[in-house]
Length: 445
Image (cartoon, rainbow, N blue to C red; front, side, top):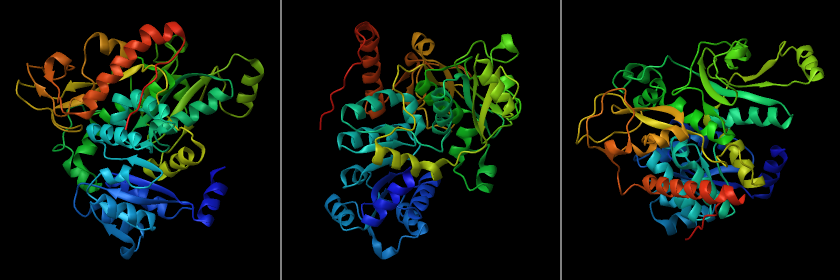
């Protein structure tokens, strides 16, 4: 149990020191949540927007005279050592200061890759709230961390981590999970832009680009990509099915078509309208006594049953994963096997040579989940490599981009990490599997 251990650390003064990069809506909520807990505090908050880091700490209840605002490493490190909090615009302080774990919460794939990579080199655990990064290079980052004796993990509270908890529960009990997924809050509109959702974003006090990435499906696609990779499932069709469903019909819908569902086979991830903000897994068993007990326990008649959690608390649950990682070296969700899914970039509008692709939730592209092997065979561009890439030939609206359609940003950390990941996966498929061993990664620094 975490609570007794957190209380003990609190009483002894051995507080878990957390660094956060990205103090937007998710990061700000995390800082506030930790401030009311036993045994854990946000000690370094980094954000490039002036004043945002200080605001996150003050609004969480940290006295202003306990906050040191600086971009200087020596001053920041001394402040943390003396029990002060640090607000900074310099993300390097997040991993160079004496903290236990670095949390990445910007939602920008390039930043997420850079922060995670540097944090691992600095011998810090990494909690990746940036699922866009994880869906692109999470396999590599996970292995780098493990080779250094560190934890790299996604978070409880976000859909991949929350669904993973249900998956672990079912599989640990010996059930066969046939599908897993999440609800989607809004109808899918792949044409959504920050302009088209601006009024709704203002009413909900959200960043328009963030809301656009929800509406155009990108967020759902990357979340289910990370989940699929963590549990070795695949999407049933490009983009998944996304049917209308209710909590009571989950076990009737996300099952093989031969039994009346929408899936061609078991082992699939999907999403649905009508069950947001919940997550689910559907499982089965052929043991008659277990089926009898599940029926008695009012989970249904079978042969498929659903575990459904009707909520996920996003960043407010993240401290649970932080504590698991730091105290027990535990992982909430991460890709340990060869990735099975990929979110690829699809043209949101007709793209012309010379155009530079903007960020997720913008005007250029949206994400669509594909089977990883199919995406690789077709040379499709991973979504996380799109921002900053220059279009070199015409791409019609609605068409997936290929590597041949763009020149990627050669200065990008995520591009270099993805190339290394692809190389490692190629070596793994040709050598590691034949010998029954995984490739190892040397981490220098």
